[in-house]
Image 1: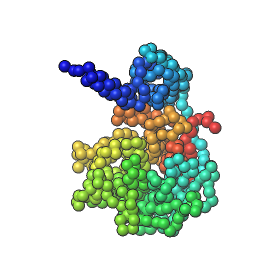
Image 2: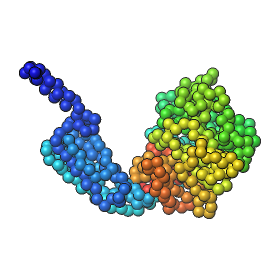
Image 3: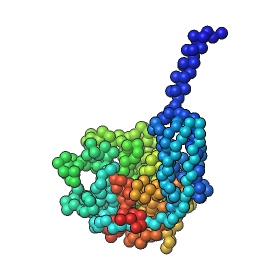
Image 4: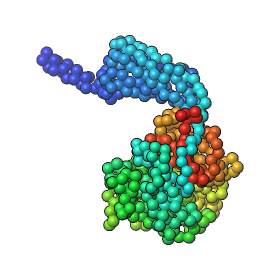
Amino acid sequence: MLTPRLRTILAALAMLVLSACGGSDGGKHQAGNGALTINLAKLPAGLPAAVRISGPASYAKTISSGQTLSGLAPGSYTVSADSVLSGNLSWSASAPVQSATVADGATAIVNVSYSSSTLTLAVRDVARVDGAVFLTAPAGDPRQFIVDRSGRIFVMQDGALLATPFLDIRNRVAASGEGGLLSMAFHPQYASNGWFFIYYTDAGNNIVVERHSVSAANRNLAEPSAVLEIIRIPHPGATNHYGGLVSFGPDGFLYLATGDGGGAGDPDGNAQNLNVLLGKMLRLDVANARGAQPYVIPATNPFAGQSARRAEIWASGLRNPWRYAFDTERLYIADVGQARREEVDIAGLSQAGLNYGWSISEGSLCYNAAICNKSALTMPAFEYDHGSVNGCSITGGYVYRGKAIAELAGRYFYSDYCGGYLRSFLLRDNKVTEETSWTIPDIDGVQSFGQDGNGELYLIASTGKIYRLVRAGSP
């Protein structure tokens, strides 16, 4: 039998446990007996909403459908309903922000009613650089860095191109065929270490990735003497299919995508050969890069420690990946086809060692019928046929995460060099949905996308014109 003193101690302990547990969101807010019902109206069935609720004691929750939130502390709550997109229809709440007062033991009600309008996009001409092939910027930086195939990088600041290039290595770059200075990437700690990486082809037809540094005296200039070669990949023969993008993943490692070496049908079988670095996605650790050891192999690379395979390889079976993009924990790879199919491959960053099929398959089609066993291959998440409507050579873009057109969040944008259009799709529940064609003026030879430090998107034409994607009618 429990003594009165022991009962008192146990009761006190129980109260301590209850008070430590907090509310329904992991103890991040004060618990109570109030409730808040969010009703959503006139939103298409199956279309997830984006409604944010905030309140006392740092309460914060986001819901995608109507529901009742219980166990709330008394006080004032703010309900904010973001616009959501379905195809090119934008569904907006008639009252995007509402307040509700929750009383102890009572239920407050907020009704959110939506109506639709057509979201219209436009492109705005922002610059012209002959030979422009890429645009990027460090996260949060208001400038844009424009890569010119001949071997220069220009800075655009406050809408104007600076006269002196950020970097000029034209004396080391060979821009014949599809080669040249093809991309650059800023280190995740660029603000503190000043490192950036470039991907180019040299006079020997090799693919070269180097680390450079910004000048300490002028942030609009690179330091010409601070150069470290990271990797040099032989690319004998043809002057096409170089791949061309270097980028840092969310894991902090350096990725680069190489083409298969050129020539119709991958005549040397590079893409399926795990002893060569062509036709691959590579993954390197350059955190402590130095002359004696410019990179190390991440321990989680699929072939790390295997002498019979190149440990730099992250994925294989690529023809000419042009371009790829990270979005949180996913990787989107746009791979240019041979003569029939263009494809986008999508995988999680934890999915190492995937084989995307080339030149056994072209997209999901058999290319080499004699060996077309697709059981060990990863088929594309999205593909399209060549033709007058679709084009002939995919240009991969990015998943939109900017703020200027918030409804576009999560949409992957792409184009086609022969098509000149702008299209997007949404990956939902690992399935491609909401394939959308956006009405913009045709752009002559969309050869690359760009993304600035705020996540806004740009399109780069073969003419050297650079366009920013905007909401139609925006200032």
